[in-house]
Image 1 (spheres, rainbow, N blue to C red):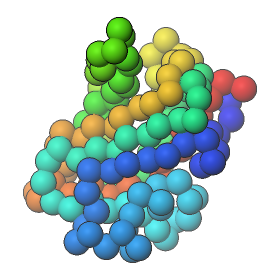
Image 2 (image 1 turned 60 degrees about the vertical axis):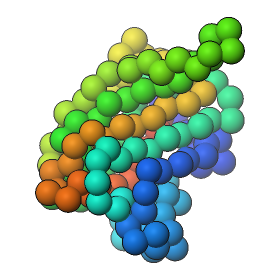
Image 3 (image 1 turned 90 degrees about the vertical axis):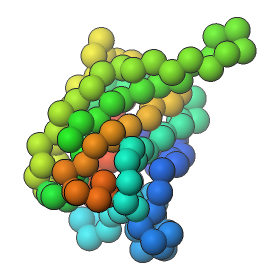
Length: 142
């Protein structure tokens, strides 16, 4: 299993705290630094959408929340286009712990061939719905 490099993906997020992209933007999801993070604004749901440069054989992902600002569940989705119509498919729902540690989740029927993934966070452990993610690592079959 190998880490999918930043150069092979682009990300979008639902919101950024106070629109302070330079301090809390999506670029910090994949920088590998323990002192930077993506911090959403308040409200639910929040999400992270990842687009790969080509189809990838994704096997698993690692995510690190800040305790107290974690997702109660992660609805992993992907979008496919069938005869010109976009179809959203739920891959699996995960239930992370409300802790600061890196958590690893395997994809069902791994590897999953896809060019996109969406991490939907319907609920947060924070009463205002904020999510804080220090790290999101995506792995592919090597």
